[in-house]
Length: 270
Picture 1 (cartoon, rainbow, N blue to C red):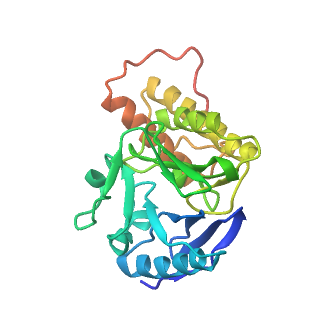
Picture 2 (cartoon, helix red, strand yellow):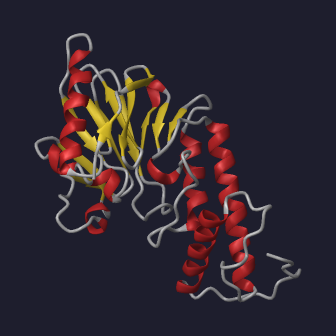
């Protein structure tokens, strides 16, 4: 697999984003007066080393230069955590369930937390928070409140629709995003896990689409139906990601033993 990394481009005051290929992962860098923090690490130790070198060059190039001191991983999928081995001498942070979810051989972060933590970079701080289950059960959001930038990992995506794999929790995803939105300023720049930045309106639109799909999943579940063949052209997402999201939502309802209710209206062509 061939890896590449774009240049770190500014998205705020000394806040930068580079794109790690081939997975198109947004890697964040926040530079303060005493240190710098990296958000996500790429797909492999080799790519992690390349990301580290590029991040250190940017952090060292600011007035006075500062070292890279901290790394936070938003979740355990390989394209975000795979490069963590390249940062073993730094303070690395993640949710307490991150190590459990990582593939065998991936190092654990040196510090974990259940709900919240913070990193002091001198003239700014980065707030780290877990607001509940969504893309995974250990999603971490990194917010730079003084500079109005937030890194949401794969809770949001703009290069494609968010991916609801077998470790996702579609029924709780929207509520987690609501909690995130409650702590962000209206003019915040939101960096998704993949794809271009978006604003609060764009984030709200994607959250609304998730809610629509989850309500469709509930209706199908109560009707005793699955996601296969349910998609229609008026659905907000293309067929594959939409059916994946709905199917995983139905799976979670089954796992929870949720009682089925008789639909009040028939499902016509849904």
